[in-house]
Length: 374
Image 1 (cartoon, rainbow, N blue to C red):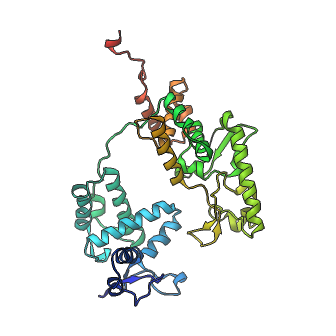
Image 2: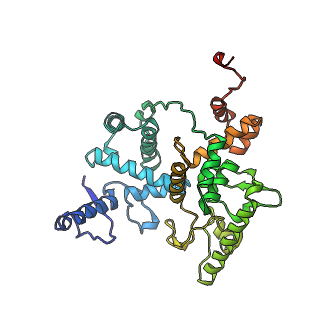
Image 3: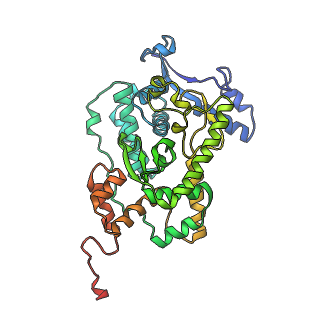
């Protein structure tokens, strides 16, 4: 049974292998090795699933992983993370095909992450999820050892919550679109990607509400639109309109539509209502179909802006987009709103998830007063 490591042809070809990279010097060689490792696909020539999209040829293992994940509508970020873990597992197992490996190799790999790499329990569970997806959904192997693997126990941690004064200082240290995004995250309780993927048609100024589409778990929900952000948001939407007009004039202007809506409504992608409220400054190629589109605002830009604002505001706590969501829920609870209302606004499936915010209140759920303060 023969195994082969197939290198995809980008700027490198099959003839461009390690000897060519060894001829380079210094950083050039390091970059060449990095790109070759990133482009490698592990291909089992003796097994595979025929795919009509590959002209009857057996697809590479990683190609089949991508196909199965997109069939199940996994996000691109999850796809990238799963592929990284599968690649690390194969390399750590001596580049043997996963069909030859079993529970012992999986447990050894996961144990190595905890003992040598010193990763968190959530990271270890993420690696396990990637390997279970590989065996169950891609290789279609359901072995008894899969049921015996125990997930790492995640510690129960309290969320980072900013005080009202800290939120005010943080937002005062920001400006432009980053300020508007951070204000919207704190004022609505949306998750980061829910806010960035907001479409123009889902902002209802007449009812002062925002319709969150396809949130966590594929659920839709409504949340409030802060009156203080009404005018800034109108200006941002007008900016998006001008960019959309420019894109249409240049022969572009189509937004990516969810699932098969583009086939059902061929002209909807060019309508302004489907455009992002926070569009990117430039057009880029869509990683799914290769078409040039204007994506939404880059989340990395907002993360850097939050870090800079934290330093300027003199806040010692770690600040992230999700910390603003935690602060939203906690401050509503402190204002006297009930857990059920906050659960609906946050989009939690179970109220027990929302109950964690009762543990970060200064006065506790029963208004307990310390005996030292009596």
